[in-house]
Image 1: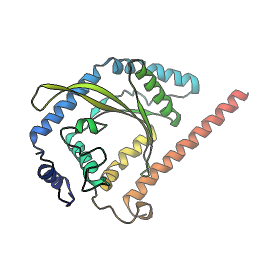
Image 2 (image 1 turned 90 degrees about the horizontal axis):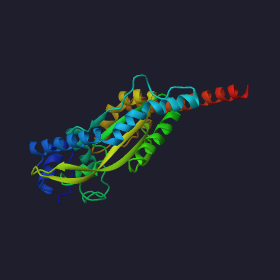
Image 3 (image 1 turned 135 degrees about the vertical axis):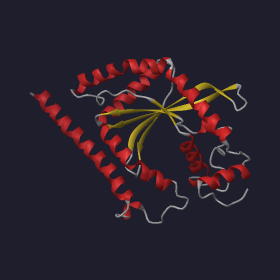
Image 4 (image 1 turned 180 degrees about the horizontal axis):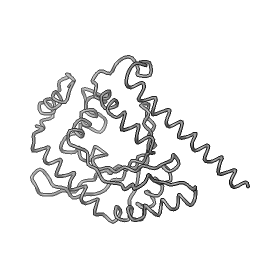
Length: 266
């Protein structure tokens, strides 16, 4: 295998064809879109998803009763989203090439290719929950897991705290789906579903800063100067704003707790 490292998505497509013998044509794109659409429809019609939506107001009422504050932002309803093909392809590029510490050899677990990529990428189907306060993140994560257990679902929980100022809880559950093959018969795949839970403030800052994060991690050769020292860069302002807001949310929780202690003491 050639040692030349692809430097952009066009190079990556050529490398995929020449070295791994996968021609990323429209046929593969259409197949991906069909598979993720099938997964989304099946999960949307599942008993778990129906019950979760049904009981979400109950979770909010339980939180309100316990803490005297609202759990969710007004009129919130979670939706299922599928990862667009181009975004998906860029993620395989990052895992196969940019973040591959073994290059020019395969990353840990082997090359990610059209034969296995729907199973290797863990967020082709995802949903988002936005709570108002920091303690609502863990509260809702526990409720989702409890709901899932009644449907024999297992979850992997990850407390995300990235240097870019991103804070959220991610839950992953692997489910068995019947999906179309390239030949248009079907096969069963074990596919991961991602549940993201974040606060209202973090949701706002993530939407503002996501483009900076995507731009930097798409670089084949990152700058030798760490963003923490480049105070003129967009990353410096955006990333530290995320950290500052997380700190502020912690202070809000401290004020809430002190207020509650005084109320209970009287």
